[in-house]
Length: 377
Image (tube, rainbow, N blue to C red; front, side, top):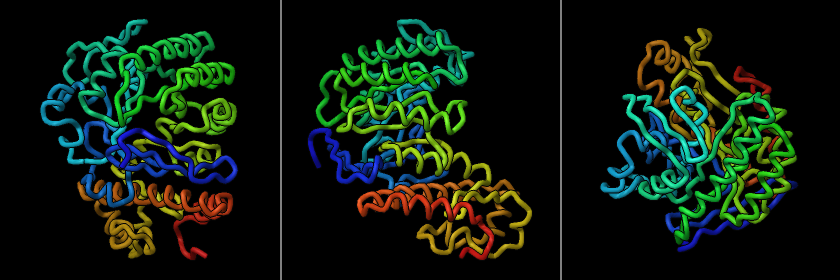
């Protein structure tokens, strides 16, 4: 493995990109989906399972880990990799999303964010510098700048204010990050659904010459077509030779469409959250195991899958587990969902290398459209 952080494009097919990020702790094949390990765990999964499914990197979260068990404690225990028994790359979200999602608990100004813990009401302050310090204590490989995310729809003045402050916070974050060999800090493009603000943000971040760039503030209330139109106008302004990360996205279709536009990295709680609520993602589309029609169905979710959860358990049994609120239901359906997401990513990587991404995308959408009832065709 490289002792430095490197990104290499291996192939392109249209705007879709196949690449590899190389870091001291390992390679990340792109396009990549990062399972969300908010509190140092991917919910309902052993991290060995997550790795076996094809995950090169997982995501941790500054806000949650700083509250419990505390970044300094994690550092004393050897860092997040040793703490969670995940020796591979980790990306940490800066806490910026919680600036939006926990708005009722915080006060925000140029300095940073002051908030009350949603756990015990204790008071905390998160600044760009403190966010980077926490990510350093966690020893994460890719660290994100602190930013302010705005829930859409919003007024232009509010979107512009947050975007400009996020740019200033990017400069402060970069200064605090300094030069950390083998690691990277990514900037975050903001600007809501306003194209001119997105372009301005992307151009000014590009001038900072960071090691990677994320698109934040999407999938926060806007329709998919708005998200995709925003990407269409924003991505051409972002550096070609740096990783492009779309934060918090999304459904399999969101990911497929975003890869077609040139995105390299994704994270989302959707596959794990859906698994805990009885919903399975498959190559036949979504399967709601709460539905009574599965009660007598002996078929597995996907007999051709390499994942035991998908291949070996009947829909009738999964339905029973879900209706009985058994913990095993969350475990098996999360396992299935992450297996499908990683299979989708692997398929896209192979298709881009082979120059057949459009055909792969069409076949994938056709499978979703057929649905989960036989015959499959």
